[in-house]
Length: 219
Image (cartoon, rainbow, N blue to C red; front, side, top):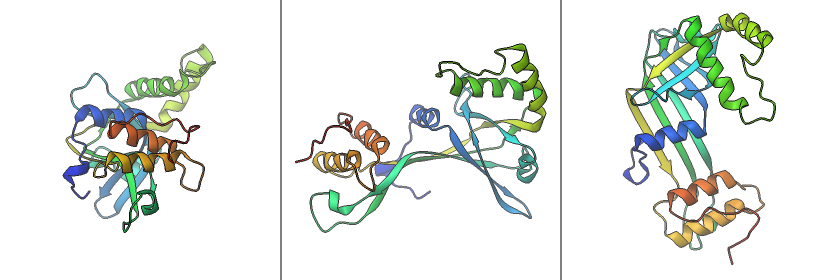
């Protein structure tokens, strides 16, 4: 990823927050003799570990294609992103761009045994189910638990200790506060590029009040 100090995201806790808020991950392995292999799975942070450690799994036989555990892996986590029109800046000439938040996380995955994998799957399900009025947890009932023990062998869990991070957050930080506010207003208004999630992140990064999509503030 091209370096740009204006957009560097070099705070470990900020990278962890990006992962927590955007847990759908792309895993890429450069397999000798095969080339890049990519898969997509949800991910958790190991909150008890030092540094950044990812927990996830693959459905069989994806782990074979990756030769999981034998080679370095790149995990890509992406936050809100979207098109920014030069017509939104309030001055011309200018160029179109794309705002985004992304982290490239490098490490060598460690394969988990079935017991560890089941515990990670349990946490993963709880992460997404607990906000629902009737959460369907892996071990909520004896029947659920028995089903979980049957299906766990169809997946391979892994732990990815991250030894190198490349992260960038391009949220118009190089623009004036007035210009950023105008862009945010356009992003929350109805239109082909409406993107309230990106608008909210732009506001946080630039120290502005988060927009309320139902209010039009731009004159």
